[in-house]
Length: 265
Image (tube, rainbow, N blue to C red):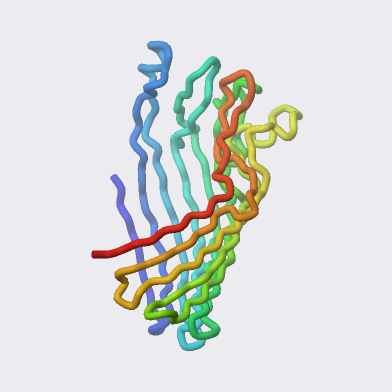
């Protein structure tokens, strides 16, 4: 049963105020990687969610400035969590419950012809409300109640700019953006358990700089683009695993520059 209730209110042509309540779920299942009959038959239950959201969007200064502000709360029951178990497999179990609060602010400004400035700021408080059956190879079984959820940075922001201008029978653009996010945890153990600190299954705060330049013909038939990602060549990891002799991490993409030429027939 996944109902959605919502209301929109427009006090004027440039402003929208809204609120919604939504029920969602993620299907349960069985772990294909289980190495014994008991774990294979145990399976895991569906994950259930109530989502509450309120927000407002408005355009100001003759539509040269757009602002959007959103607040939300997610209440999880039977949250699905993946655990790595020695010697070499992963299982999914249901944490009892979790709750997430957050606020997001987005802004886009067009102060001059062809120039667009953008920015976004997000705050997130995502924690297990009740999770007594957490497990890692390093700490064994422990109570993760009150710990932060995996992959849930407390703060994050993005700033960017793009300038568009006519050139040689088409339109050109040049732009850049910088994305930063706070510390990430990849395990319910977070920074450590039982007095242990700086547990390795985490990624400290980092930022990525990206840039782009391109041209598109007036009839949109031809296009040329040059895109640079992670231009500062920041080293970071996007996930970890702890069922081997040492904790392993999957690295994020290194600095890359890509060129593309497109033709639309």
